[in-house]
Length: 152
Image (cartoon, rainbow, N blue to C red; front, side):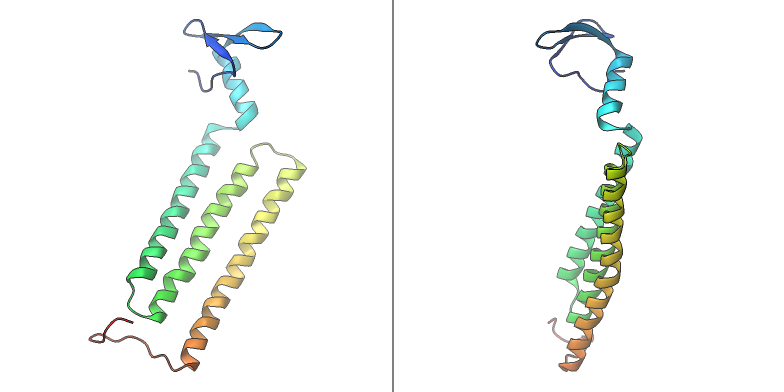
């Protein structure tokens, strides 16, 4: 099974590639192509997990955006705003941290640690900000929506 085509390669048979480089011509088998892919891009299973997490994060963001548009008043709109920020951000940041760790080294480990710190900061600041906004609405005298009232 061929996972990636070598750059500049010409397929000669079902299992071999004839790789053309400026000064070197050589044959590459399917195993060599798979090893080339794994060396450059990491494991395919990790890619599947990363894509799954990113799609889940985007679904979270989309659901929160729809909730902000559909809910009737100020207070109920803040609930999906806080959820999409923390949930969607968490899933996408975890996906980025995992993607970054394809080639394990000290620099990628430190970058992953920085991404985790960003997630922790978002987890601490987003609910605090939402609470501050709700408190400001209460102090301004904005009452919650009740059934029968016009949407605000």
